[in-house]
Amino acid sequence: MTPSLRLFGLMLATCAVVACNRQGPQVPKQVDDNQAQQDTTEGVESVTVDPNAAVAGSEVDAAGDITAPSREFESGQTVYISVPSKLGRKQGEKLEVFWFHQGKSQKEDTKPVAGPYTVFEHIPTEPGDYNVEVDANGRPIALVQFTVK
Image (cartoon, rainbow, N blue to C red; front, side, top):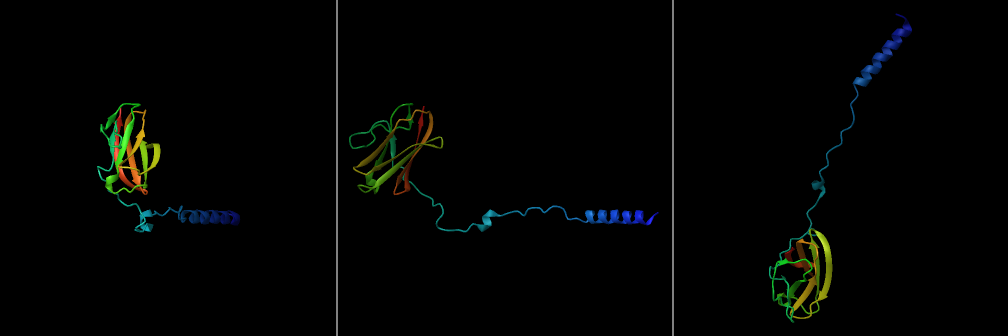
């Protein structure tokens, strides 16, 4: 064997040993996102609503009280949500109502408390389940559910 052929063979063997001794690609380390989260009082707070804080119906009287309570309505029928003031609501306090149909916002409305009842109304046209959230001072006070056929 010639010296140049031996040198070439030795270089080829060295390259093969170096290539076999390689460590492979770096595997990403698993991240634990919950570990970095700290408990604070600024998170989501649970809210309890009074089941009588708002009532749904198809008719209201002059004072705003529901005279025909209902949880089922026809498409195109007016749905009234009545919020009684006797539950600690003060005159002039703003109430907000959010109407949802299958998780999507349908309507928002804001009114001041001006009497014994504050009434909100909506005429839903799409059949299905609806949720109405009533807020006072940015905090939920009532949740009403009904169905439109």
